Length: 336
Image (cartoon, rainbow, N blue to C red; front, side):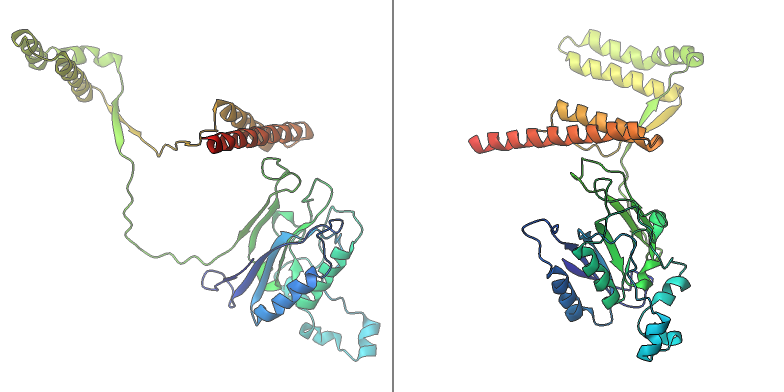
């Protein structure tokens, strides 16, 4: 999937050509080594002078091999290239200018596979750089993105966009979202154009709830025993046909009005209550979700292996319960 991002919203002076990519693993029967050539050709036809941003599961092992052109002094001399003018071949100086490390860090110890070699060549040919292990919280860490064993999920951008990455963080594995991949949180800097606009917000109404105060108990009794209660009793005695519901509502209103006069009312806000209208989301699902949320909070407070195992098991159990009940509900709907 390819889309364009306007420089109106980003701190750059060019359009951004962004895309999401997936390449099947090399061992899959659906894999094709020509995938990178297809992406490269598509990039050439659409790029122009636009900046590049690519994200996705590429299934490439790149380790810490360089994704940029490294000019050798001997080769440069033989080719007649002045190393002082190598900016025309590579934008590595831009990384140093933006304070971005030239070399990446990665915890992946796999040897380069064919996908990895193609990906590194793809980066060098298009002068784009891998963000993993280079920017954000992931800088100098290079956290694993798949099954705690490899880095195969990447974000690749033009050098001008590296400094706009505000946050790049690999989240701990959560079976609720994927069977093998970790979530990657990416936050990009954007232009903030704040204008004074009169916005009407429909705030939820508040309910005034009186707060009981023992010191004002006598005042509350005196307020009730005033002429108001006498009028309610008189109506009940004189009118034999008086509806008891009307009398009950009058007494209730009397108590509330007296409480508001005597005690200090407290506003109780009513938020938007989300109702779950899914028939299959039963109490068992809610219980599994509570267990999952508790495990996630425990792991966020203390990130150790024991809490991680509990989180993985809770998320997997919650996910499987929801899937099972959802399938059962769909079958019942078809029977109807």
